[in-house]
Every structure is written in structure tokens, then in C-alpha cells.
Image (cartoon, rainbow, N blue to C red; front, side):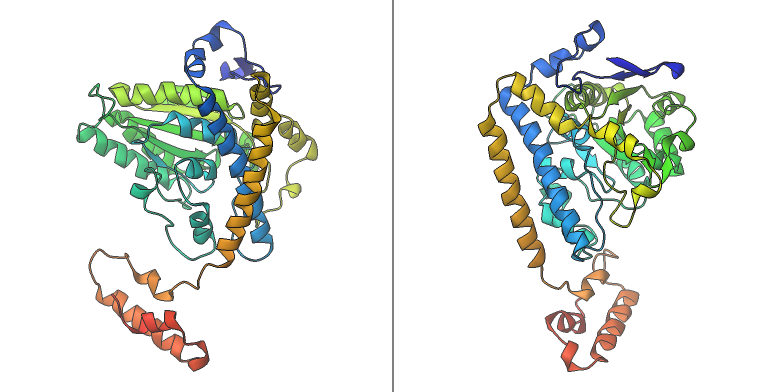
Length: 389
């Protein structure tokens, strides 16, 4: 462990140095059992998830530049924080993301093209959480997912699905959010209810240093992890570019939350290497020196060095590179082959039962489409005209 904010008395948990060497200290030793229990297959899987997520990120960014996506939200640099908690959670835990948790999505079995369908404007959700490892849909309203997660976690408590001592029954919830979201009232409200109801929940804050163009130092005069204590929730700050620290602390905290110990809070110190979104230009508000200092702490290179020190050979890493290229080609092909979405689908699922306003709006849109003449008519317009609501 290393203290990076001594002025505020905050210690940052680190188990793996930027050079890929295990930290040797009494404090780190407390978490080492979680790391020592990881087998070679799990360690390889964690590295694979990080590498393939970054390859997906690169392909999606290229598609956005070519006009194939309405927006892209890069995750480059945050793979270590995300993969650690993804592997620390159990299959029956529920994970509530914001809109940048691509590594968690892929680790939980979400088809990456489903993420692109959302950001291409083809769908309002993208996937059914029950069919994708209890990974819930992306939330673009900043901070609102923390309320969704806390409400769900309250339900687990009320239904007796935590604190039973049965690992097949006990569940936990993870909610992901960024440093900018901590300035939203939703996050504070979620923390209030989580503390009051002692929910089985982990608040996982990825502090990537910038809320679009606003630095975290402007947002908060004290470390964000300290906010958890104000609500009576234990908090830990970790090196977010250290996948082992993310895994170990998340595993510890999720075990405590599931067992009835109440909510926990992690602040993962990481960095957004790319832009906030494809519509942002980070060169206007941050320096190249700052950027390069974080690139030197890259989570993937750090973990590769660690695996090589354990005897992992070139064949494994070359195989991942080839798999990544195949993934990128597959994502591009399937994205470009996506059919034109049915405009009428925007009226589906607004209400649980057929609603006269939705029917009226669907009919109006069908008439508007037809007003352009038969040249614009296709199967999608016909579906609208059919009045499926």
C-alpha cells in the first residue's frame, strides 16, 4: 500500500506496482490471501478481459469517427478497475453501470454490438439483464443508477436475500459511477438510503480525474472517499490501475455486504486516457505531461509484466492480440450490417399496457413517414402503420 494523499490522511491500496511487482508490506499482506487464491486460469481471464475491452474500445472509436455511431464513450485506462470488481462479484450479484463500464459488460457476457446498438440509436436499452449476467442497462442520466441500485439492494434486504449465511442465497449489488456523479444529489440520496437500510451494496467510484472538463480538485476540496464516512459507510481508496487491488478490495467488501455488514464504498484512482466522449476534445483542458504520467501507469502493461514474471510466455499474449483483431473485425462487420430500426419501437414498453396516447403518436408518425411518398416506405414504416400497440 502507498499513501498518495498524506495531507488528508488517505491511504491508497496498491498490491501491484506500475512495474508489475507485488507490493511487500504488512498492510498489503492482509489482502494477499485473495490474490493468492487466484489460479492461473483466472489471472489469464482477467488479462484477456482487459485486452479485449481495449480492442473493442479502439474499434468503436473508429466507427464513431466514420459516422457509424451517434456517440462513443471510451474506457481506455479504466480497464483494471473494472475487471477487478467484475471478477470479484458472484454470478448472482447485480451490477448497475453508468455508460463507460465496457469491461464489466464484456466480462458479464454482454455482446459488444449490443452496446453499439445503443450508441447508434437502434435501441433504448440494449439487452435483458437477466440474460446477461445480471448486468443492468447503461444509464446516461448522471448518477441516477445509484438510486436504481440502492432500491434494488433494499429489495434484497427486505426479501431476505442477504445475511443468511448461505452463499447460494446471499446476493449483493454493485453500482458504478464517476467523480462527476458525486456532485449529483442522486448519489447522496442513494448513500443515505443505503446506510439507513444497511443494503448489501458496493458503491464503486471510478475517479478518472475529470468530469468532462472540470478537474476533481475543483469538484471536491477533500478526497471523495471521505464522503462515505459522512454517511456512516466504510470507504477505501485503491489504485484503480491495479487490477489485483481492485479485485481484492472488491471481493472483501462484497463478502461483507452479502453477509449483512451493510454497504461499502471504493474510490478507484484511475484516469480517462481518451476523451470524455467522441464529442469532446481533452486537449483544450488538460496537459500532455499529465496524460503521459498516467499512460506510464497503464493497467494492461502492468498486469502483463506481472504475468510474465510468473512465467507466462509470448504465445499467450500473441494469441490475445490475434483474438482482439478477430473481435474488432467481427464487431465492425456486424455493426455495419445492423438493419434499420423500426421507428415504431420507440413507443414500445413506455407503458406496461396499451395506451391511447402512444397509439395516437404511433399513428401520427406513420402518417408523417407516408407524407414523403412511396420512395421512403419500407418494412419499418409498414410496422408503424400496423399499429402494434
